[in-house]
Amino acid sequence: MKLLFIGQTAIWEAMVVAEAYLGNPHPSQWRLWGQVEAEKAGGPVYIGTDVRGNEVYTLGVPHPWIAANIVKDLQEICYPRGDKVETFTINVGGQAVTRLLSRIAAWPVIGGAAFLLAGYRVRKKADRLIALGEEIARFYAPVEKPMLAAKPWLGKTET
Amino acid sequence: MRVVYHCYGGSHSSALAAAIHVGYLDPRRLPSRRELMSIPYYDKTDDNDFGRIKLVGIDEDGNQVYCLGQMDFGGMSKNLYGLLELIGVKDEFYLVPTMPYVNYLLMVGGNLSRKRSLPLIGRPLIVWGSRLAYHRLTRLVEQVKVNIKDRRTGG
Image 1: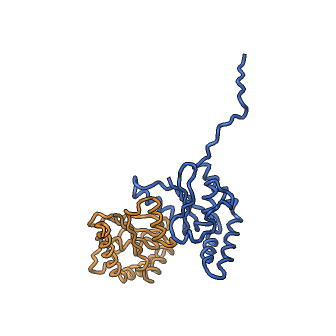
Image 2: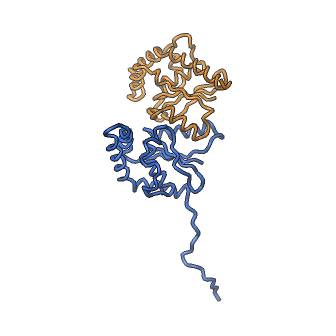
């Protein structure tokens, strides 16, 4: 299965949620943080593979819900062929501004300032985005942990 | 092969091109208002239809023809092809953008009829705009049919 996180940009908010989903909540682990070039080619951006072997992608479009509809319909039309794709639309405020700043980041002179501002704005809401990614991970790719009893059984039997 | 004509709303230029493709309209003469209004999905969509891929019909070669409204999808074809590649069905689809064939009458008429819910004012403009764009759209459809045949034969 493939998981597609759809936001208004592929390399800011949606990417943070996807990385948190993959168990990478620290900014130093975000390989594609602000990589405007990665988004320029268009289409989904590969982020990584989760513990269950699901490939994780992000997509940046002005209206994420439309992309989710398109994916759903494409899968229905092609059923049973094609890979299963699960979509998650990222509904966090301020994405339109991030998208605009991300576009301006490619401009000369003021591009650098726009890039820094976009990064600052996303970092400010990173906690919420990370919590969202971790929440999704709990349902879709729970990390296997050994079962632990509250009290160890000592092997005593009632006599 | 599945042919998807796509534009902003999915209810005018793409629906019209799809209707020409499957043979609902005669490409040699301009359609009447009645013929236009009888096209499936033509000026009949609402906000819930954005991103919905709707089957219009099947052409003489057995290709399924769809129309799609996707608003401003941000690099429309690139993102659509990207999604097709993600699902692994890119080779089955042929995407045709019809936005370059949309004139101002279709834009204003479509906005009034669909977005502002004023079909009484918008519809005459849409019909006028559709008739103006008709011959360009028929040429587009002819080219699409040739391209599909070429793709099938590996040309």
